[in-house]
Amino acid sequence: MSNSASSDCLFCRIVAGDIPANRVYEDEFCIGFPDINPQAPTHLLIIPKQHIASTAKSDAKDAALLGSLMSAAAEIARSENLSKGYRIVVNTGDDGGQTVNHLHLHLLGGRHMTWPPG
Ligand code: AMP
Ligand code: ZN
Image (cartoon, rainbow, N blue to C red; front, side):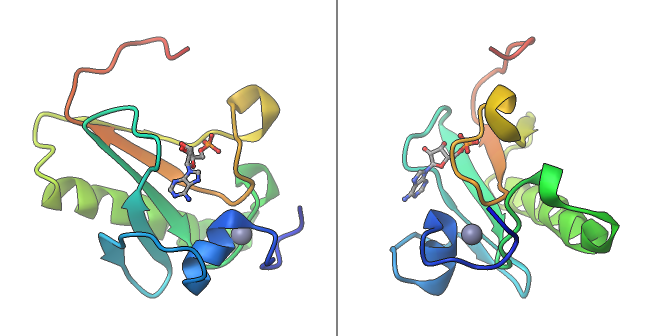
């Protein structure tokens, strides 16, 4: 998928408000909302409002936006009281297990994480 917003893109539709999501976080660049299929007691997704398909489709001009996603994740983790730690995951492409082709950070917390991931 290209980097232009698409009515075919699930997460662009959430950004547009066509599909409801409980926005636990929102700023100029991104939103955060619960994953519909949580893998931990806290499992939130942080996505850019702008459509970027994946990290593989990002480039240097996206550096500030990518930084703002990480910064938002850290702020959300504080507001969710994940003081014992958490994991930020960015699945990319088929081998990375990406299923929604709109770049997103998973913020997982509230339980101990194992390594290596599956
Ligand atoms: P990934 O597999 O890394 O591409 O992650 C996509 C995530 O989106 C999965 O964890 C899904 O559970 C989640 N997801 C799919 N549809 C929705 C939705 N409508 N609202 C919230 N999360 C969703
Ligand atoms: Zn999109």
